[in-house]
Length: 416
Image (cartoon, rainbow, N blue to C red; front, side, top):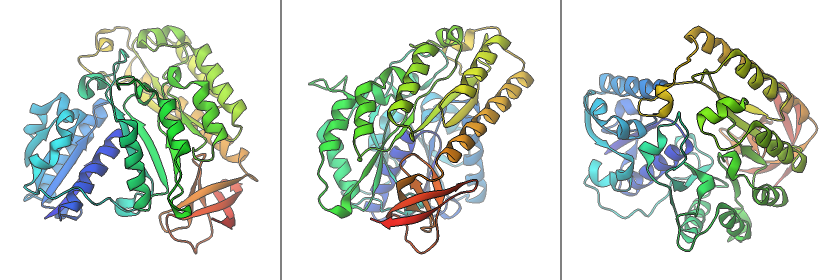
């Protein structure tokens, strides 16, 4: 049987899709493009209305281009609106997030053991995304994800270590640790654990051989969960990428309170300043929402002013998207669409300047980097994609020196 997996949204979904593909391959299925597959699994996101629309359009396109395909849909949109998904053409099954562990029993009759692992390069992947936690109990007023992912659940530390060992043995040299609310890792375990406990165990992990050296990249952390213990551990260890993603969402304390975010802009600014002081070359990304209900010109100006002077290196900008069922969907004071779009444009311009500034600041620095694509592009620990001279394979560790920031290019000074 030929299969395809189409994934929308966050790294948690990417990790779930990797597990689906592993099991399909282990069962004897063969990967194919969606227009040629017998079975297509669509793993959906529902964080915004745009994400819902994108999933619907993709499902309709697959059904049009491949009318014989059986389409199985899972993920957050499928969990939130299963009837809408089931009404789309060629959809044979709708599987909610809680049923993902048994997804293969729903979509096929294969019963072979899950013994193989996707190798680097399959579907363009070089890094492996490992989900260590799912679910969220935070009460953010705009977010539907707690309703689609359920209560926080963590994988046992030994299970995480086992997943790391399998990925390393398969040839992966970078593993991204991800979760819906990653910073809550371990609070539900017995005995109770924490994210820093997990990171310390990973830091102490001895690779089976030099060829199994793995760099860990910590995925998105809520600001209140990014303790100085975590910052210090990442700064002191070569096993962790100097890369943080710390969602801000807004820089107006009034809007943060309305969003039910449990920190102030002063707290956030102090946190990223400490990260920058501890790791001068670290990348620090963030998420920002513009046009939240009640956002005034003064609120937006506070956001823009902070971002301009911040040490952030890249931004993900989201115009507010109403999610029925959330508290924010009942809030008034919404800005006109044209105003929201203009605010989003301005923040994206700020984000572009921050990224340009960071790239320029890295000229002359040296980094360990992992080659991707055809080997002529390398990703550094601080998340720069640097073009290097050809002649290497994908998935090789190299030591590079950044020679220019625009375009971002470098030279290899040492092979590892």
